[in-house]
Figure 1: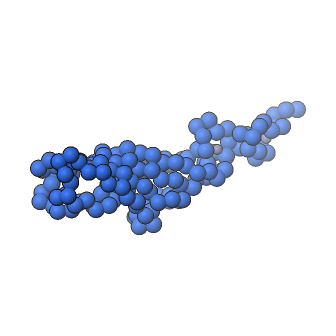
Figure 2 (figure 1 turned 90 degrees about the vertical axis):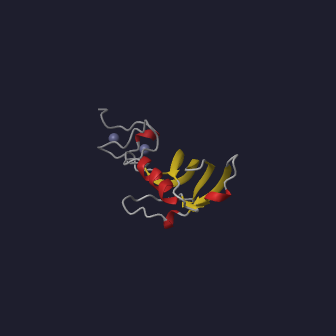
Figure 3 (figure 1 turned 45 degrees about the vertical axis):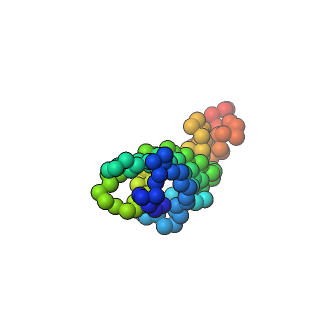
Length: 136
Ligand SMILES: [Zn+2]
Ligand SMILES: [Zn+2]
């Protein structure tokens, strides 16, 4: 999202946009977005500073690292950005917003916090009920 510095009124400005995940350079991590990343920012500025309070929302397709079930994960994040203005007429927010998503992205995703995983012996998904292993 490109912000035109001079078009931000004294009372601030709301802008909405979308980041195309395909255009983000997410080479270091594999993130399967199932929707565009929606961004909503409130911009304010003083003479030398630009502040952007943004909310990011996106959906990703994930595979639980414990039970291997595929599920949709919702990402929601509030981001505060600050730019020092040195005469720029426009500021691109995309890179910073993208970084925020990557910073927060978990190395291991779980379908739920207390996912019980798979039984190491029979492979049954223990979220769907106990298996017969361990019973004699
Ligand atoms: Zn799971
Ligand atoms: Zn079992």
